[in-house]
Length: 273
Ligand code: ATR
Image (cartoon, rainbow, N blue to C red):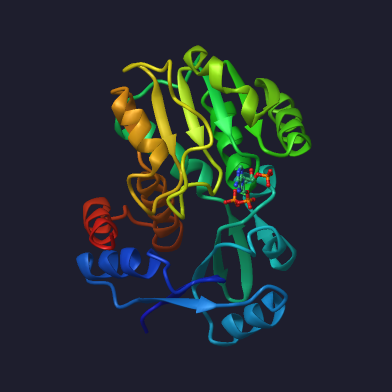
C-alpha cells in the first residue's frame, strides 16, 4: 500500500509542501500521497488522533503548532529537544517520533554554495521559533558570535542566553539600534515574518558589501525588500525558498530513507511562485 503524508497548520491552503513532496514521489515513482490538513489552534489533540486513525506515515507541522506538538510525541531526536519545537513527525505503528529539520534546512544552502560559517560574526533579526533553530545551526557550525536584534528586547535577550549555553558569544539589541552597525557582520539574517506582506525591511543595509551574506527566511515573495536592498549592495544572497527546500529534503529523507530528488523538488517549489 502507498504511504500517506500531510502538513498540518492554520492557515494551510497556501502551503507549498504538498507540491514539493508530490513532485518527489513522481520523480522516484513512489506510490505515496501528501496533503495539506488544516488544524486550527486549540484543536491539535483531536487532529493528531485523526491522523493516527488513518495511519498517516508522517507529517510536517507549521504555524501555530510547532511547540504544542512536542506534547504529543512519544520520542524525539536531539534537534527537536535542543530547539524545543517540532516540524517533522514519523509514525511507526502508532509511535510518533519528532524531528526539527529547520536547523539543517537553514544550513543546507551554506553547504551547497560552500559558504563558510566557522569564525564568522552573525547578526540575526528576530527571536521566534525559526530564530531559535538558526541559533542552534550557528552553534553547530561554530560561528564566532551572534548579535540578536528583536522588536521585543526581552525575547532577544532570552534567545541570546540560549545561544551562550550552546557555545556562542552572544548579545541582544533592539532593532532600531542596529542600523549603523551592519558593516560589522559577515552574515545577516531576517528571521522575522516582516516581508511576507511586502513590508519594507526592518533594518537598513547601508554599509554592507559584496562579501556580506544576506539571508531572508521569508520565502514569499521571493524578492522581499530586504533581499532587494542586499542585491543593491551586491551582497551574497540566500533566499527563503532555499531553507524551505532544505528542510523539505531532510523531511523526505527521514521518512523514506533514500536520497531526496533535490532538483525535482526545487523545480516544483519554484513553479509555485
Ligand atoms: P516563527 O516561528 O516563524 O519564527 P514567531 O515565533 O511568531 O514566528 O516569531 C516572529 C518574529 O518576527 C519575532 O521575532 C517577532 O518579534 P517580537 O518578538 O517582537 O514579536 C518578529 N516580528 C513580527 N512582526 C514584526 C514587526 N512588524 N516588526 C519587527 N519584528 C516583527
